[in-house]
Length: 178
Image 1 (cartoon, one colour):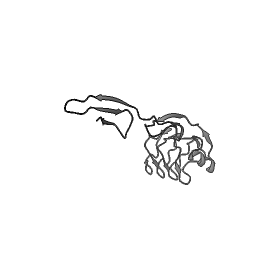
Image 2: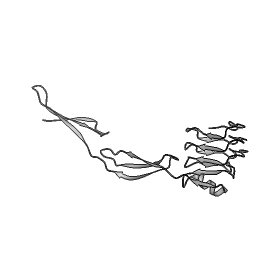
Image 3: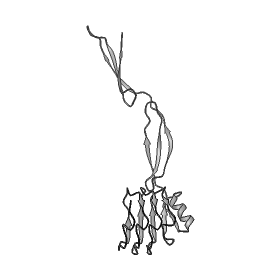
């Protein structure tokens, strides 16, 4: 959280908030009259009212968070909001009359593996804002294992050891022969 009046009266022209910060409090950037551009990371989930109060030079805010709550009117109406399509920042800009520029989603594929009994899928995740959705089901692979036959001796039965490659339910077990 960047607290109330935490970053006020600075001479910074460009501010990039660190990934991991989740909230901008009321008056967080109070009277930063030199600030022209601010970048908000995808970790931000809440921007309180008047977070950028009296930031009179602010013309560009890049909002990388897809799902961020804007309380009342935290962004000056003169600032252009750059954000991904469909984000809450886009909705906010349209509701409050801020100019908005779509920076577009940049999706990468993450394959969430199947197991021997469970299906997996491909997760498309935006590297800009974190928006994601599932596509393309990955079939369960079935049980895959190697077998090692242990021959009987004079004092012990023979048996087969099965070592499963992917199975979380049966990492290894033995089948005894009679």
